[in-house]
Amino acid sequence: MPENSEKFLEVKNVSKSYVGVQALDKVSLSIHKGEIDCLVGENGSGKSTLIKIIAGVVQPDEGEIIINGKSFKKLHAIDSIREGIQVIYQDLSLFPNMTIAENISLNQMVERKRKIISWHEINDIAEKEISRINKELNLEEKVENISIANKQLVAICRALTQDAKLIIMDEPTTAIAKKEIDFLFSVITDLKKRGISTLFVSHKLSEVLKISEKVTVIRDGKLVGVYNTKDLNHDKLSFYMSGRKITNSAFNYQKEKLEPKKPLLEVKDLSKKGNFQDISFKVYSGEIIGITGILGSGRTELALALFGLNKPDSGNIYIDGKLANIKYPKDAIDLGLSYLPEDRLNQGLFIKKSIGNNIVVTVLKSLLSRFNLINNNNKYKSAKEWTEELNVLAPSLDTSAQSLSGGNQQRIVIAKWLATNPKIFILDGPTVGIDVASKSNIHHIIRNLANRGMGVIIISDEIQEILNNCNRLIVIKEGRMVKEMDTNEVSEDKLLEILSRKIV
Ligand SMILES: Nc1ncnc2c1ncn2[C@@H]1O[C@H](COP(=O)(O)OP(=O)(O)OP(=O)(O)O)[C@@H](O)[C@H]1O
Ligand SMILES: [Mg+2]
Figure (cartoon, rainbow, N blue to C red):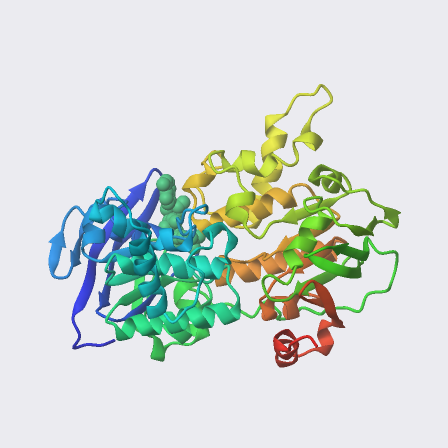
């Protein structure tokens, strides 16, 4: 902690309650000028709520916020922005059909209140910020066509045009690949040199330990403590977050060699131009297959193809030995497949509907009674079982999904698909955005499902997740399978090497 540098932001004893939930209870936090800080805590501990309070979009019930020495009893969003606080939310709030230059310059142009907008000016503003973060981007490209990592950089540049003194990012690294994370971190380090502070929320503790100088930990809406990162390690940090010791999820898990029987799922020479090519593999009952490869390798497109959401050009899919004709997700569901999408918050939830309704929406058919009526008791039974098993933190099943914390929304989507009792479950990034303790819980559940005979495919770029849970793994690069191997026979280093090796 830079003791002698000045404090930029001080949050003092802030509390906030919603109906039935004390989201924050007298939490304090401070950030010095040019400091890189992290805010960590389990799902639902109050991180996003605290960020919204600092941004002035949620009003606390009590407490004080001091920015640049000025005290605010009631902080409005416009005050927060004027004082130099810029929040980058997970959805990044960019305009997809506008260009990179327009997205970066928009706020500035609005502020200048010009009637006539000069394209020169727009480009100048954008170019200046992009070159300051040492990035080359085509300013004329529409934002909808660029990668998530680049969208994030655009959002950062837009924040910088607003003369940001503190940039807050809510889970910025969940959807971007390792190389892009390294670049993001170099940008953050450069901002520090310019005296700009960063506060970010992440569940990836190794990143928290790598980038931050100071960590604020909250649990159940209460402050646990503020720690210098150099005094922390992974175990200490997860202990502070959860109040318990988290054992490695691989502990005691014996990955058995399975007797080859008839495969539950067989994919044969599946190809789709520009997505993936000649993909063949089998999944047996009780087996967990990992599919890995950097983002953009075609792994998600492959999963979508299995689920009837991305029509392949050629190749076949067999389920239980029979040729499967999967045109729509409904066909896939009828054949016993379930798919947990990568982008759950957009694709996975009916955000305004209740938790209970979200979970049962995919199983309604099987719940229809003989007289075609939906029995409400039945309907909620499976929802209740799975929310309990997945530890969903919510006042009741009637709570709307919208009011849940990000990580708890993720769990609802998982519960929703588990309630369909699938034969084959494809999970794309099953623990993205989920805190460490629940992560091992979810891994445990997945392994139990496999033990009961389900065939599971885990798509992930987290090497530990793949190695600890899967029996076999497939590496995909630029749409092609480059390796298939037994996870007992590959080390973490070896896998990293395969992933980073160029294809020749
Ligand atoms: N608008 C709201 N209405 C009702 N309850 C809310 C609302 N917003 C947040 N909550 C509740 O406040 C608590 C804290 O939520 P918050 O989103 O701050 O958690 P978080 O730490 O960001 O979690 P995550 O890691 O899952 O994103 C949760 O119990 C959540 O359900
Ligand atoms: Mg959150």
